[in-house]
Amino acid sequence: MTTLTGDYLTLDDGRPAVRLTRTYRRPVEKVWSYASDPAELARWFPSTFEVDELRPGAVIRFYDDPHLPESTGTVLAADAPHHLSYTWGADELRLDVEPLGDGDTRLTLINVLERADTAARNAAGWEVCLHALDAADRGEAEAPSGPAWKELYDAYIVAEFPSGAPVPGLDDAT
Image 1 (cartoon, rainbow, N blue to C red):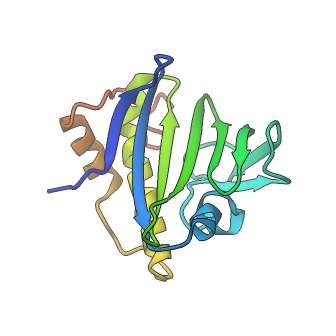
Image 2 (cartoon, helix red, strand yellow; image 1 turned 45 degrees about the horizontal axis):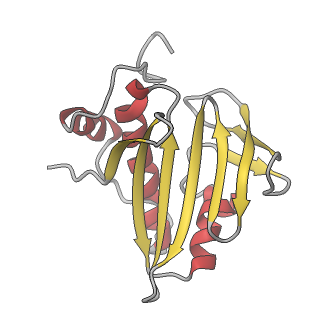
């Protein structure tokens, strides 16, 4: 059985989102680097992430994603070492880092969706990405194979996450 760690939610402003959390036995500053340092992001984020400075209004360049064309986003908020949000395509990505008081730090990733029907697809994708981050956090050079994206996607559909959006690389209508 595939274990899912994502939640589907509707934000106070009515926008759909998926949320995934991880807890790491690391200080806040280290987990912040997982969310904000391009060298750390390269270990788990699906695109190369390039930005001159993490400040509101800064332009982020995303490239080298096998399923998406090169694009740009905009930093919406940056409050080191606790919160970073930016646009990525038509979506918004929020990364929150919270100390838990016992040496652990929680990372919460919220993908605010342009369309609800992308929820299952995106949640499965973030599961794969965070699986790679978990492996990097354990010091593994490469993530061990975990559940495949398609298996996770199917499990999110069974969990009644909205679905139906085209899947880059699989559907003709991408």
